[in-house]
Image (cartoon, rainbow, N blue to C red; front, side, top):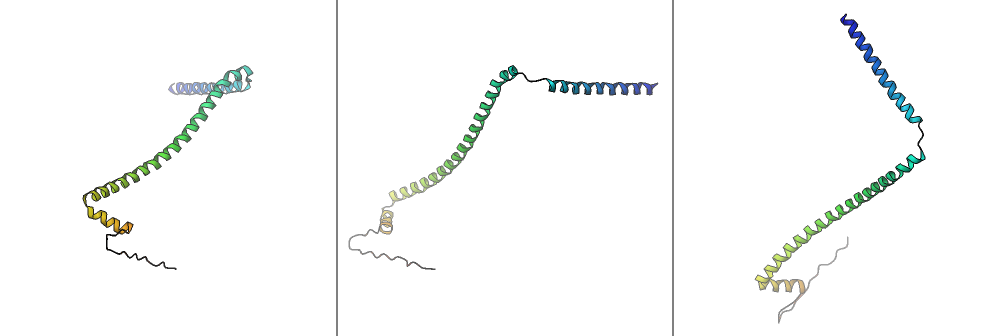
Length: 130
């Protein structure tokens, strides 16, 4: 008796599955046969155009955003270089302000200046040919 009920339940489940499958297949068959009206296309056309415009705008915005990110990275690197140069120059400036003998030393070495009664000889290294 129990077995008969189980078999009956299984049979009814299989029939309901077949019915569900047939109804889904019938749905797709019916929907694929239905032609698309020109009025339906005219109703959908503004949405299709708007979607294409929004998609193209977002793509161009994304491209520009990537370009700007690259420029930002380059400018941040330049800022680091300028800050390091500024620190170096500011310490050199403060050193020059504190010690006047350093100014004389730089003037003699970099600009070949001399005091009265001195003679300067500039010796350049010979170029070597390989």
